Picture (cartoon, rainbow over the protein chains, first blue to last red):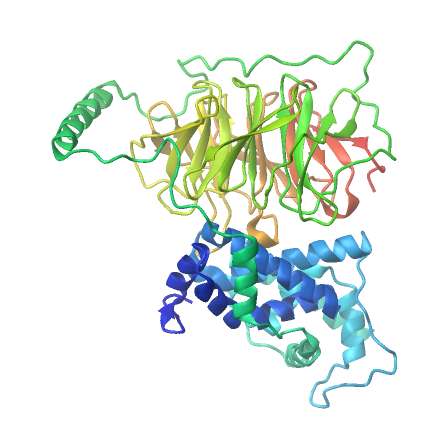
Length: 179
Length: 397
């Protein structure tokens, strides 16, 4: 993300302005990153309403704590990490120690014919993962974070993040291919 | 990343289709306006540490005085090599509370007692004079901080209900100041002091931007803090009684950045650690606060301590029993012996309830960990026998 442009400004300068309370700069961040944050939150929560609350909470944390961000160019993984954390907290408050996501109506057949994995099967498999692991899978396969960004978001080295992801994928593979 | 196989391609496609249901709609300008109105960023100036305008002639005099001080300091400088017992005498770390006769600290507290909610971002410290852990947690909805204490003689939680709670504690820090007998809190912007006897949070001045509290230094009787926003660590001491910040002179560089720290009395050093990520390798450094001299470590690479999303820093305490700095990230408990420059893994989550939040209990010379993820029980860990003990709540699964 180094030196990337954002509406005529660099990411770093936008983050600096937003951290100082500049509404327009903050709005630019929202416009740029909200959709990815919503996807991560939805992956973690498995529920639209909870995901909306999680993203709202994440933006509030961002508004108050953006100035404490160590590396402004890492704002994307930071925002996604904050979102995943807020989502995890909401899931925990709502469901307690047992984490479940809505696996939908058994009659739900909105499957993408081009995909080899059915939506209902995917939901069932994701329901067996923790919210953190679901968020990590989304960050990698949908948001396409790099190894460095993934490590930054999870708070580990890139290789440790890759190993964790590999274990999660092995679980999903077992569940979806063998189950 | 390695090239994806057929399954991963299918998984990515299925995930993308599934996440089309995510609530991605937003009105950025309205959201920004809403936050700006509810939580205005009002801070532009700072407290007692602010630099004042100095005339040019005074700058020259200051520069000459600085050069003279550097010459004298260089003459007196004794190096930063660690020694098993330092010539300086580290004073005992404060007067210690004693449990009432007949109390049994090994007996678990009531399982059905009211206890704080732990989600993330909470902090605990041990108040040596009161014999209680002070915890800043959050309300069950996660929106506001709450103050609790945990009595280590009876293993019972008490919600303190002070006159006013901290207004904000997202990513805040706590340090117990032995000299002032107060728990010092920073909410990232403002300083606070908690007087447990009076059950009162006292509002102090503003913290320098980006400065996070580190540890109590028993030699100076001050709290050490550092600016973690920049790679070249900006070090400060905080005197809660005068509410004054003073910058610590650093004799050498470059220091390593840090996330978590503790004061190690066995070598009279401030030990700092940062995990990997954000383009940096994990690293550990020590600083002699008397000379400002940093030293590195030749120890095998420190363990990969990480607390997961949101960059929650590992919990760090100085274990007075084994004279080591102990780190916990909720998955592993690792000790660093500064005199031997050696790491050791004490426990791993697969074999025991490694807590994320930890304090050192000098009354019983053990570590205390309080519940974090998914109803983990409150536990004690004896670093000598390496035995876990449940203090409160449900038995260890």
